[in-house]
Figure 1 (cartoon, one colour):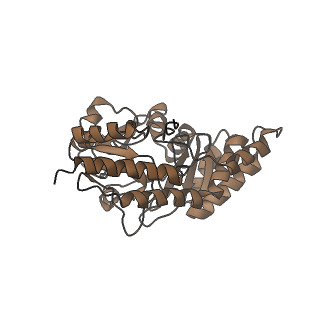
Figure 2 (tube, helix red, strand yellow; figure 1 turned 60 degrees about the vertical axis):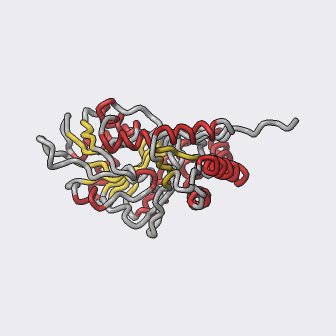
Length: 335
């Protein structure tokens, strides 16, 4: 008898042999912190985004520096959408900053709330959910935008409009860096102040991993794009909606399908799971009850499903996913 197919997880960190070599090369080094390694990482990312880059140990450390330099008081309100990831939520909370949450649209985007607030918002965290550039409405509503580019690690049209950019490299992100966070600022004086506010450099191992990932970034993004384009040709028979592929391009943090009903979505999910193919309803973490009850978020949670789309997904695994989806579509096409 043949062996059963191996499981295809929803997410797998895109760690490569080159990453292992980079980590092994510094693992025996006597210094836990290597300032030169940090400087090289910052120089590479700063040149890519045409900004001054400052590397922090994590999102909390980056938010601490921002709060100090921008002189945000305790209790300052920052506009965010309901899909702000836990690392940033925790960073805000750790520094006594309040996230003011707004609803989302069908693509997981919305303009941050501003005029409806009794107290003015100090800033807005604009993120490009799933690698799709944020809509123009988000920028029109933002007096002080700060851009989260973790889902868009290399420039795209409509991305990089804010002076300050934030990029996280924690285990759940597209690029790995042991939790390291990059803050990129177009203002040289403010960047110098942010650098001075940094109290700790990232560890050498984290920097080595981050540098290795950046050296491979085009390959990693291309592998994701290949899978996305293969998924975009799915024979869905009108049973679900595929994510948009704008002419200006997008990155592929996730590949999200939208279904007409929760029951249909759940039947599709069970069909994949029986073949050891794992998918999941977004966002992948628990939302507060009041956020989950927002109309746009509520519909998105009940009708959406994410497919595996990491760079480490090989061609045979991708074919398995696609064939299984085609079987489900054929079985459920009642036309």
